[in-house]
Amino acid sequence: MTIMKNKMVGFPEVSLLVMGLAAMWLMPNDLSFLTRIITSALFVLSLDLVLGYGGIVTLGHAAFFGVGAYAAGVYAISISGEPLTGLLVGGVVGGLVALVTGALLLRTHGLTCLMMTIAIAQILLEVLNKWRSVTGGDDGLSGIVVEPIFGVFEFDFMGRTGFVYSLITLVVCFWIMRKLVSSPFGLTCVGIREDRLRMTALGCNVYLHALVMYVAGGVFAGIAGALMAQTTQVVGLSSLGFTWSAEALVMLVLGGMGHLWGAVIGTILFMVVHHFASAIDPFQWMFVIGGLLVAVVLLFPQGLAQAGIGMFQKIFGYGRIAEEKS
Picture 1 (cartoon, helix red, strand yellow):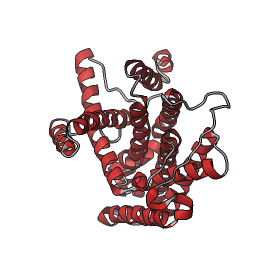
Picture 2: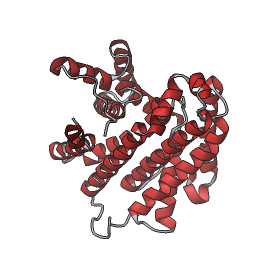
Picture 3: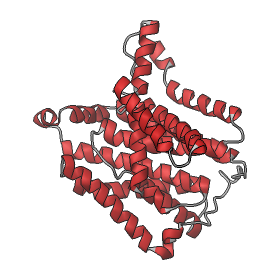
Picture 4: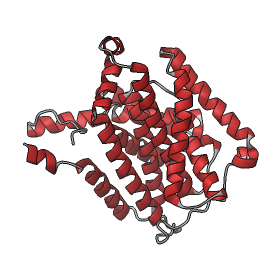
């Protein structure tokens, strides 16, 4: 049994890599779209840490994505276009903003906490809008030039380098998140999500655990924003708007909260349906998304990922499969 467990180490990451390369081979002319799916998936994964594992309800998570994108963009324009350092800058800024705001809003609960997440995101949006000399305001931040990765792999017009770079970033971040949620800390956060009072009675520092998970979500959201800024070379205020937070929440609900694969599956489904539905009717595509969301919630209340695992178990007769096992 131990040998089998060891062989399974890294299997989810290998699956992600294979899926990405297969998509690249099947859709070589749509690499920019596939790259958007990857950056969106990383953002939704960061939301899953906060909501699915930490139990912190938020509608302002895009704030961390946006500040990470702007930080990476400003860094590339003013200091250096080195991409890996830019990712680090985006993650650090996203984490710092999450630390400062989370220290305040996590002292509240329920509807008050939810409203504060929206308020903080809107405040940050207005700050970036007014800071035109740095962010470009309503016009957005453009002129972002990214240097070749390791000085060798240049970002080409077809987007091949950007896609592979984004895919590898997603795989590495997925591995880190999987280790995080399967650690004693991650399991404690799940316990807090399920029964906050009981965990408090057991002597758990609920506030500190929630804050650390919130900051972790901010770090990965900032990395996702930085990745978007580097691959598109432009950042707009919509990157930290309410709509982007709400869409990420829809993606997570579709795939299933508290399940890393759920975030990936929900993102792929949402982005693909959005892409084709908006191409058919640019004004009514939300009707299709709304119908899809209602159908999934009614038929698969735990999300498509958990439904898929349940079906797999019934077909092959296996016991409960936990994606977080390493």
